[in-house]
Structure formats: structure tokens, C-alpha cells
Length: 357
Image 1 (cartoon, one colour):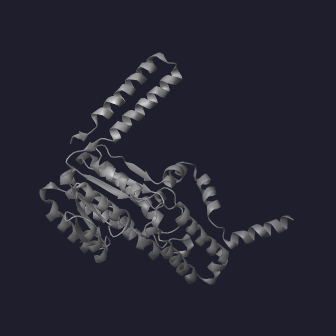
Image 2 (image 1 turned 120 degrees about the vertical axis):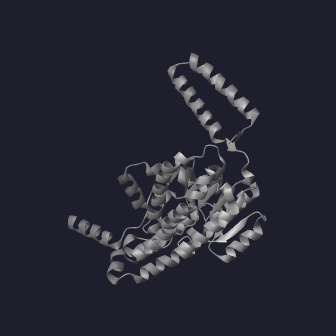
Image 3 (image 1 turned 180 degrees about the vertical axis):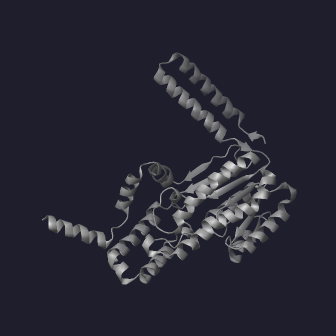
């Protein structure tokens, strides 16, 4: 593949690099280090912005296109001229997307937990791409709820999320891998910053951590065949996954099914404050600009040198990702400040204070 680059921009950058090199040869060690750092950054920037040619004849398969990131990405790539095959969970979602895009875009129904659905999707895509193969596979389908304190959940609550976010993603990848291998294409897996920092109990954080691990092993295994694997780590965004109404309704259901003893251990104040934390997260942290995420996906599919990981959103770049590199006890302390304290812990603390007095 050849890259697209701007001659004028390249000339300007070369002039800057040449000037910096001259400065490095004559400057003190501190200035030399700074100059080398700037040169390294400029070289990385040039490399990162190189794009592939002839993208209009490439095929991209995207899961979870009813709403959210998948829906926006399908429209975005359709406008760029890709052959987009958008997998939707519902018939209505597929019809709506089809009317919003060109006739070039094709849709297919897909429940990633259904072996039959996956097999039919593979057959449909195979017929579309022919011997050319599939350039891009974007695993975007996912769900979040139920989430909540771990003790409030059952193993079925975990598996409902894991079956979609992790097992479904792996199953789709394994079925489409021969088509991607034929094109020496790209696989883009949507994880989350919650795959690095487990902010809430439930299958969501567990599944996203699994996506990170699966993608790492897949990338190392498939690099020998020319396939590149990228991980997208969005922060908080307003999508159906972060729908506050659904989250609150689910938390209410979890609370009501707890035993009286467990409810007493947590207390009604804990429940109410837990709801408030979710409201704060959804209202204050969630971005409405979904293109911050889809632009990362776009780059992973079209760049000559795609990145291994993409973080999207200010909260991901400046909060979640940085604290993921700090010691666990610091992360625990920080999250303890954000999350409410159970009544059981408050009663014990109060009793110790009384005894101390």
C-alpha cells in the first residue's frame, strides 16, 4: 500500500527538523535532549498521519450499528466511500440506518450470542466480498447492565453481559478471521477505560478487561499474517449503554431482590447515594460527541500505521488512563471517595469512636 501525504506539509516539517538538528549540534546537552524529543514527536506525527490509498473498494463489517458508536461509524465510513456492511440487532435499526445512508451500505441482522446469526452473517459477507476478503472487522456490539455492587449480583447477571461483550466478540472474530486474513486487513475491538479501572461491579468491567487481553494475544498471533489489531478505549459517552433511565431501573430491581439482611448492611442512604453517583457520571462525565470515538476507529482502519490502543474522551486521556498506571491502593482510595460507604461500615466506625470516647 502507498501512503497519502501532503508535499507542502512534508517540506515544512523537513525544514523544521533540519533547523532543530543544527541546533542540537551546537547547543548544550539540555537543549539537545529537547531537540531530539521534538524531532521524535514530529517523526511520530508524520508517521501517524500517513493514510492508505484506494480505500473506496474496501469492505468493512461493523457490529452493533442500531445506535451509538456503530451507527455513527457506519454513516461516517459510508460517506468516505467504503463498502460498509452494518450488523444490527433489530430490524428497525437496520431499516433506519439503510434510509440514512447510500445504497452502497448493506445491513444484516446479528445477535452476537447466536451461533446461527453469526454463521448467516459470515455467509452474507462472504458473498459480498468475494475473493477480495474483508478489510475491516469492527467489534462494537455491547451491553452494560446489570451493574452494581458485586454482592447484589448473580452469576447470571455476569454471564448476560459477558456473553455479548466478550464471548460474542471472540466468536464473531474467530468466524470472520479467515476473511480478514485473506485481505490482510484490520480488526478493531471496542473495549473501555473500564477495562483498566473497575469502577463498578458487574460483568461490564470484567468483559472489557477480557477484550483487552484477547485483543493483545490476537494482535501478537496475527501480526505474522499482516493483520493489525487495534483496541478502542472510550471514556464516558452518551449512548444506549449509558442510558441513565435503564441503569436506575436496573439498580432498583437489584435492590428490591436483596435479602433484608443485605439491604440492612448497605442501608437506603447507600442505595440513594449510589444512584446519585450514576447520575453524576452520566450527566457530568458523559460526552455527546461520539465522533471522538469513531474518528479513532476510522484511523485504525485507514492509517498506514494504526495504533495499538486509542483512548477517546477527555476523561479517558486525563483521568482514567493516567490513574490506571498508579498503585492499586491509590486507585482504591480515590474510588472510595467517589462511591458511597455501606451502613455496616459506618455503624462500625461510629461504635469505635464511642468506645474511644
